[in-house]
Image 1: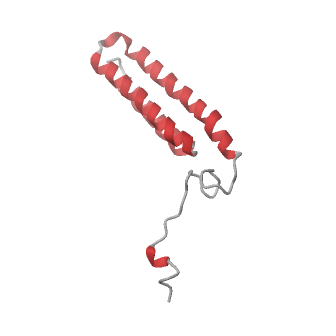
Image 2 (image 1 turned 90 degrees about the horizontal axis):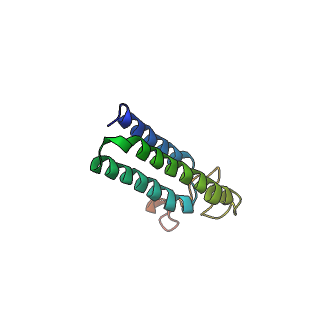
Image 3 (image 1 turned 120 degrees about the horizontal axis):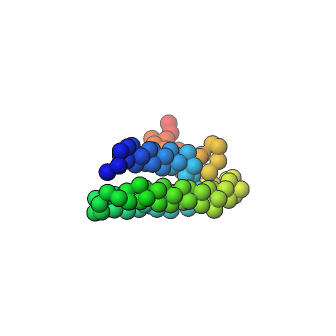
Length: 116
């Protein structure tokens, strides 16, 4: 493989993880982006292990471009409309609940029936 190729793959995976951590907040993005990004990286690895040296950099460029396109697509089509949605809905990310479908899980000992 080319010099520094493994570091570029690691940096792409780190960028994908950082994007997931910060920007993937709506239910639609959470359903689509991780699957597409994982598929791109898996296809890149299939190509790396099944083909010879010459086009590794081009395959990495295609994978990186596809992941970047999906990042921008999810931001424009899912995250931005989700911010304008109903702030009291469970599927809307807010400052108090940054992840979609946030439902607090309380301990069974906190129920009204078990109060003294």
